[in-house]
Each structure stands twice: as C-alpha cells, then as structure tokens.
Amino acid sequence: MGFKDYCFRKSLWVFHFGGASCNNCDIEILDCLTPRHDLERFGILLVGSIRHADVLLVNGSINRRDKDRLLELYRQAPKPILVVAIGACGCTGGIFAEGNTFAGPVDKIIPVDAYIPGCPPKPEAIISGIVKLAGKK
Amino acid sequence: MAVYLFYFLIFPGLLFMAVAGALLSWYDRKITARVQFRKGPPLLQPFYDFFKLLLVKETILPKHGSRSVFLIAPLLGVFGATMAGLFILLPLFGIETGFRGDVIVIFYLLTLPSFSYIIGSLASGNPLAAVGASREMKLIISYELTFLLVVAAVIMKSGQQFDMNSIIETQQTGRPFIGSISGVLLFVAGVFCIQAKLALVPFDMPEAETELASGIYIEYSGPPYAMIKLAKQIMFFILPAFLVAILLNGMNPGINIVWFILKILGVVLLLTLIRNTNPRLKIKQASGFFLIWMNLLVVVAIVLIAFGL
Image (cartoon, rainbow over all chains, first blue to last red; front, side, top):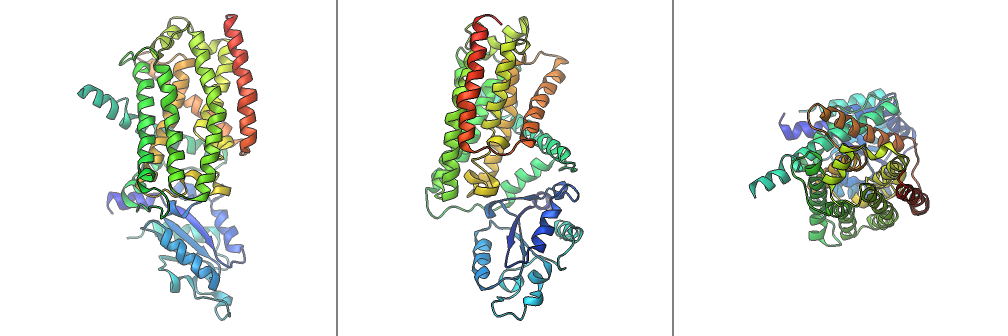
C-alpha cells in the first residue's frame, strides 16, 4: 500500500444519502458516530457537503425520484469515491424489490464497493464493514 | 535574501507553523473526543487528512462563477496566515526584532484568511456559500473592532510602543500584562475574538454544518480544500501565540520554552472547552455580543489602564 493510498484509507470522510428509507438504517448510522462506537478513532468524519466526501453511504430503497439524485450526487463527488450500500433495501431492494416505484438496488445505478446487509444492520456490523473497506487492497 | 526565504518557508514559517498547527488541531479534536467520552483520532490524523486532500482527491471546479478567483483564494489565505505568523513568531522567538508598527501590520494580515474565504466562496457561485460568506462578513464587522481595541489597549498598556518586540520586552522586564485587572479583561475579550476568528462553535455560523452544509467551503474539494485546511491550522497556532505574546509574557529562552508551549496549550484548551460547551449563536446575537458587551469590556479595560491598574 503506497503513501497516498494509506492516507486515503486512514481518513475516510462520509457523506450520508438516505433514499426512501424507513429511517432505521439512518439511526443506526448515526449510532456509529456516538461516544459508544466512535468512528472518529478510524479517522472517519461525517461531512455536510458531497465535495468533501470519500465515502458515499446509501441506504433505503432507491425509487425513481431518488435515482436521479443519487446519480447527480455520484457525478458531483470528487473521485476516488467509495460507495457503501447499507441495509437490505440498499443491497437488494428488500421487501420493496417488487414495488412499482422501485428503481433497482444501488449497484444497478452506481458501482458499489461494499455491502452491509441487515434490516437494519447493527452499528457493529457497519463498523466492521467500514474497517474492512479501509483495509481493502 | 536566502535567509528571509528560509524564515518564510521553513523555520518560523510555513513548514513549522503547518506542523505545529496540525498537532494543535489534533489536540483540539482529542480534547473534544475526551469531553464527549470518546476515544478520539490518532496523533497523525490531521496529516492523513491533509495529504489525502492534497494528493488523492480530485478538484472539481464550479460551473458558474469565476474559476481562477476560486482557485487563487485559498492560496491567498495560506499566504496571509503565514505572513502574519512570521511577523508574530520572529519577535516572539527572538530571531529578528521586527519593525516599528508591526502590530498594526499583523492585525491587518490576520484578517486576510477570512477575506480570502469570502472571496473564494462568492466566486463559487453556490447560494449556500453566498449565505455563508455574508455571515462571515457580518462576523468580521462584529469582532474586528473588539480585536482592534484589544490591540490598542495592549499598545497603551506597554507605554505607546507599536512593535511586538517592545511589547514582549516590556512584559519580560516588568510583569506580564495579564497580572492586572485590565489584563484579565483584555484576555477574556481576546479569547472570544480568537474564537470568532477561527470560526469555532459559538461563532461558526459561516460554516454551519447542519444548516448550510459547511457554508463557505461547500464547493471546495481536493487540493484547494487542503490549502484552506492548512490556512485554518496555521491560524489555529498563530492566534493563540499572538495572545500569549501580547498578554502572557511571550517566550523566554532556554528551558522556558516548555512554559511557552504550556501557555499555548492552555489557551487552546480554553478555546476547545468553550467550543464544546456552547451551541451556535445566531448572527444577530454574535453581533450584539461583540458590538455591545465585548466592546464595553475592552473600554472598561482601557479606562482602567489609564488609571494604571
């Protein structure tokens, strides 16, 4: 792992995109940043602007209206960017997979680097996924 | 000529200030984490962040707005912070004596980073950045008068001496300015001015992560954002150093360097604790706070100085 790659893996800034989510995954993601789980010890920060992001967290089922927003966000993000699909809806579509407004799981729209399944995944599962992502390659 | 370039780029200049500022920003984040009962980031975290932004990330230019100004503004910020730091640190470390009137120059150079953020964010053409820039302008108008009054009071206290070197020498031969009632009042006003200059939490309405999505920096990515981070880290080191120089006795040579470092860490600790125990103010409240209460405090201090207290 080169110097540039090492710095990138040690300082992942996260931007959170919630699709048509039932809000459980959002709460579990915020749980990761609380004192008990503290993602900042891995250098992970939650940022407010996609321009500063290194990781795009996507959760919730992506419906037809969300699809355009998600594509726009992905285009606006400075590369390299990692995409993480969180929860059953983000990974596969979950119970919404057959729905009329469903526009495909996240990996049909943008390339995904890590999947964290669960409905909702526990904060420990999210941390484990992100640490694996940081140690990838 | 070469020695000045060395001063600017290496020792009290860019490299030294960047490293010191990065370590201080780690200290700030670690204290924040400890206050919130978290573990906090590793020691080298600011370096990872900086090199990631500088070397790895892509720069995205805004479609609307002026691209060249957008890119030059962060460099202007780094330049202003470095020059101000140079004029503060050269007399403080006893390397050069500076010149008559350099406190005024430092005062103007210290506003350059804030102005460069305003210029850069307005050049990006983003509406949220424009809101952030207008808030930053209002904030500058509010705190700048207080800061100027603090500097004026310090000049008055040192017996009408307009250069950093004599101000520090006056304190070292006599006693530090903070050892009097007026000095304590000036210190309180100075700490709040620094808090506003660094845009830390009670006064962070220009960046306001929750409502403006980091406001004035919203369009910056990659190397320009790394430059902004660098300017902010340099300011995080030189503003406490400036306060230590004008009120807390500066630095004596020898083993007293440890004492100097402790003073800087103490001031930063104070800033961090204020930041962690306060909510964000509205811009109107911040203006009122500085224009009425802080100015009143400094005017009282000036009256006390006139009576020799």
